[in-house]
Every structure is written in C-alpha cells, then in structure tokens.
Image 1 (cartoon, helix red, strand yellow):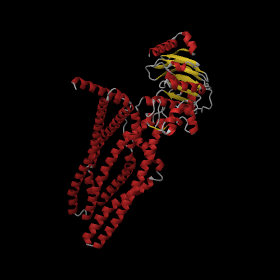
Image 2 (cartoon, rainbow, N blue to C red; image 1 turned 180 degrees about the vertical axis):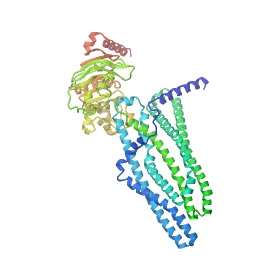
Image 3 (tube, helix red, strand yellow; image 1 turned 60 degrees about the vertical axis):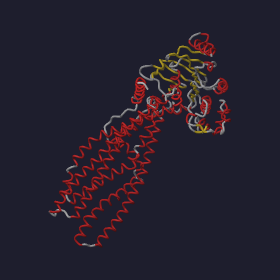
Image 4 (tube, rainbow, N blue to C red; image 1 turned 45 degrees about the horizontal axis):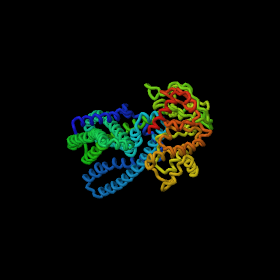
Length: 612
C-alpha cells in the first residue's frame, strides 16, 4: 500500500471515529455525590423489610465471630496456657472456636444468598424502569442518539452495578463494623500501641483521596468507549449489505480495530489506577507491622502488655488492613457505579419532548377530520420544515401529499401521529388540539405503514397481530387476505407460524410490505397513513392492494405519501408541497388542468417511465 493510500485510510478512520466521539454520549461531568448514590440505593427499598434484615443478620454473625476468635486465641488461651499449662482449657477453647467458625460459615452463607437475591431484584427493577422509560420518550430523543449508545445504557451500565448491589453494599457495612470493632478492641488492649500504629492513617487518607477523581473519570471513559463500540457494531450489522456491496470490509475492520484498541487502553488505564490502591494499603500495612514489632516488643519488656495480648493485637492488626483494602475496592465499585448511574439517570431524567398533559382527554370514537392551523415546525434552529401552513383533511377523505424530498410531507405525518409537536400553531382532530389528547388513545386511532417495514423476530402471525394483540387467528388471516398477503403466506412451509428473524430477512421486500399492510389494517384505525407504502411493491401486487384499499378506506381518513404518482390518482385531495409550503391542492384532474407543479411532476415521471 502506498503512502498516499495509508494516509487516505487514516483520514477516513479519523473521520469515522470523530463521528462517534462527538455523538451525544460524552462524559457527564458531575462531582461525586452521595445524594445520587442514595437515589440508586433507593431501588433496594422494596426489599429492605424482608430480605435485607436476613442478609444483615448473617453479616453480623460472621463479623462477631471474626472479632471474638482472636481474643480467645491470644488473651485467653495463650496467657492461661503459659501461666497454668492446662491442656484441658486449650481443648475447651478449640471446641468453642470450631463452634464459632461453624456459626461464621452459616452467617456468610446467609449473607451471600440474601444479598444476591436483593442484587438480582434491584438489577431487574432498574433495567425494567429504564426500558419502560425509554419506550415513552419522544422521537427527538432517538434522533440524537445511536441505537448502540442506548443499548449500552440498558445492558452494560446496568450490569456494571450488579457487583455493587450483590456484594458492595453489604461488604461496605460489614467492613465499617469490622473496622470500628477492631479499633475499639485495639484501644481496649493497648491505647499507646494503637495510637503509634494509627499515625500512618492520615497520610494514607490524603493520598487515596487524590486517586478518587482520576479513577472515576477512567471508568466513565470506559463506558463511553463501550458505547462507541456498540454504536459501530450496530451500524455494521444493520448495514452489512451496503458494506459488502461497496467492498468496505477492510475499512470497517480497521474502524473496529481502532475502537477496540481505544476500549482496551481505557480498561487498562482504569484497572491500573484501581490496582494502585491495594499495594498502597499493603505497604501501609507493612509500615504498621514494623511499628507493631518495634514498639510492641518494647511494651512486653516493660510488662505494659502480655504476650497473649500482643498476639491478639497482632492478629487484629493483620485483620485491620483487610477491611481498609476492601473499603478501597468498595469505593472503586462506587466509582464504577457512579459512572454508570450518571448515564442511567441521564436517560431516566430525560423528559419527552412531546409531553402528555396531566388532565389530557382520552380520545373516543372520531370522525377523522384533521386540521392544521398556521402550523410551523423545525427539526433544528437552522431550517424550518413547515412554514405556517393551513390545511383541512375532511373526515373520510383520501388525501395525498406530493412534493420533492424535504418538502415537508413526512413532517405533516409526524405531527398527525404526534411524534413531534408544532413549534407554532396547532393540529386538531375533530376540533380537539392533539396536545389535549392522551398519546395512547390518539395512536390507537391511527395506523401507519412505512416504506422501510420493520419485521420483529417471531412468527408471521405474531407480526401481523402486533397491530392488535387481542386479535384472533381468524381476524389476522382475514386482514392478510384483504391486502393480498394470504397467498404467499400459505405457500410457506409453516404458513402463518413461519418464524422470521429480525427485520424479516427471509422475506422479500414486497412480502414484508404486505405484512405491514395487514398489521396496520388489523388495528382497525379511523386514520390510516401510508408513507411511501407501495414503493417496494411490484405493479401486480399494487393493483391488488389498490382494490383492497378502495373498500377499506371507505369511511376512514387516509393520508398517502407517494413518489409513484399513479398510486394517488384517485385521491380526493392532492396537496403539493415545496420547501414547507403548500403551493397547490385539488384532485388529479383539477391539478392537471392548472398545469402547475403537479402537472410538471406527472409529466416528468411519465417521461421517465416511457424512457425505461
């Protein structure tokens, strides 16, 4: 490969990576705060009465045994054996210790079982509330984020909290109790020896505090890199046909390799910073042991402390650094949890850009008259999609929207379904502003068929029934017959029970479109929207559908968007749009007689068809 080719490839990779870097998934810069962690731990509240007390009981039993055992071994057993030489007393102590360790084992088993149960419940609830909330967010939210980025929040970010809830919370409580108990007992045994060893704690605290922000940022960076990988992976899988058609496999592999390397570096950086803490604690423990030996031996010589108490003290000092080290690990878990919870709560705090009023009315039966009153709309501040349009679609009419790409056709449909709200003016159905109607009741009255049909994993029967889950098999089959889908479905090996994978790749484009028609019609809408719905269907199939639509659209309001003008000749009203304005409207004959924009579009398309 020449130097120029290498440079070109690097430029393309850089441009692609910039696209992911500057997506709406950047680091969230907030100081670490316990208020947010309290909100996160609030998900444990439903289990605080039944499961948590049992986990805490197991933890208290195990911790109590760990604090009692060193006293029995050192202060009681060793000192009494040295003074009295009684082996019977030793056997008694051994028997008691065996009993205590059995209690410790039982306590740990109870703690682990119930905390795992709590943790799994919390993760289930958190993922459920996140998914439920995302389902209710408006289209603008999805316009600004990639599918991969959303996927990471619901899967990876929630999963990363699992250790925190199953182990971290109870370990934090256990280690705090253990640490307080050890410090209390150390002071009881020898206050002067305890104070001598505690000198190193302030230094340890200052150094560890400085690591916190760096560790948190590192884990946040890991989450962002994972989000980028998922975004690219999602696009690569969805667009694999385009990739292979343009022989861009090597470039795609290069993009992924670079992202994967960045993810690896982010993980390595985060784990290295995490790894600093434990050796630091162990080094502090080594200094503490040195002080213990030097000063402890001196206290034994001056008979300020007995050999048994010294042994007990030494065991407690060995135990002292263990909870401190684990507290560091728990803090790291909190940092990981903080990075993930910031990203989860960012989504949970997202409010729909199309809000539902608290006292919104439920839409009952409608006639289907749609009115646009001085409606303006802009997807962004730079360009208006609609510019103050006034439009009436009478109940039962079939209305066609015609115009060049970007003229505002799909925007009108998006406002009728209330995927977006107008930036000015209002849209009404039967005189009621859509903003005064509940979203569910509005969308129950409207069915939409898109050019890019989405087929879900499952059977063909399930896919058609998606429009109305309560429909019977007979109703599903009847809908398929009306749109002409029954014939090809019956020829499949398993008929309506044929399993189709994601996006229905085993079906042709036309077959997927027919299933989408059946799905929409099964929903029995008062308003039916066809957005380029016949663009992927051959002429023979289109004739079948047109015949079915003549019957089905009777008494319904229908809005059709079509570049293929032959499909809209019989529409009651044809709206011609240009750059967000209505420039013509009327039926086919009226517009042809005007010899305006519609006339030009028909003639241009007729000329193209003849040339073909």
